[in-house]
Length: 153
Image (cartoon, rainbow, N blue to C red; front, top):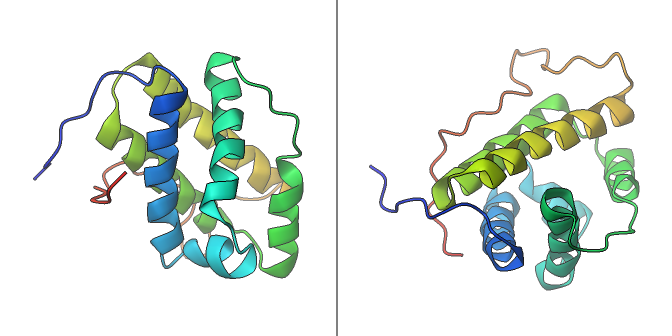
């Protein structure tokens, strides 16, 4: 049962801040991908949030400056513990669920599609262009948006 109704479309930085805060709250707590953020990278959400909001504001609205290296931190994580197709798939699942729980509209759909493209590009670059997008166990890059998140923004 859905306890909240999705609001209007993502319209700017304030909406992105709520989306990203909810997404990272879920991602940090997730048993599959959480350790990448909490144990390996030691991500401080309050430091990371303005940077990643700049990234998404630039990606969706072209209204922010983002001149950081988005690949470098992922390559560093990958060198400590491989980022697999399943890891990227889980990221996409949480991303879709977060957006679907908060917003509906063209910008929300673009954010989900952009997240999939980014995950695919990062995975291919880290694992090689011929990398399969499913794991040996058949669980991999499957963007399932049916996960209902019940975290506070």
